[in-house]
Length: 281
Image (cartoon, rainbow, N blue to C red; front, side, top):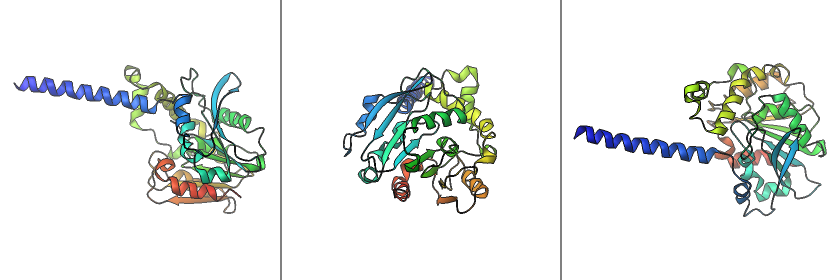
């Protein structure tokens, strides 16, 4: 009897694990164009979703265009991430009245992307500059989240503002979660969903890549704001504190989010939105 019960419990647990794994894979996978646009069904302004080219790569860009007079806010997602991370902001009527907005998928994170992540802030910088090349730079507000933080901060052209959300900008405080071993170990790598393999590759190389930039973050003509949760363990709060030490007070402003975590883009939407609106004029 005991063996039968144990067998039944084992089967149930296995089915649950497979179910959870399947749901996790589906939920975190990049969304199709149709799924992306569903987030804007109630939006006052309908977005334009286009497929763009950069060098030999293709990527998706979503744009909210209200008025050419308005500044343009450009969102850069993190690892793991996509242009869909900012849909709530881009569909917000008040933000739409103050900004034109753009978000895009970085290489390796597009829907059914056959290309690999480039593991290079320099490459991401060049791609971002290509994306904004037609925009009046004095009206561009860059918003970089997590890994998108150093990408935004690496832009040295004079812009309206650079806003960082929990930026991963310093190698010395870059954590390497134990879960990365599932990707490192060949025997378990097959278990890692495709987009998480891309994220793992980028995460593993990020620490070394940062060393090429981190001593010169303050060599920028732009004023910078960093919003960071004090309880963030994925990208520790120390990242923004170290930036504060590197910049002059007139050029850099650190906004603490007390007990905030790395999911601040979603969990603290109203607070982040309030901060973004400060740079509309």
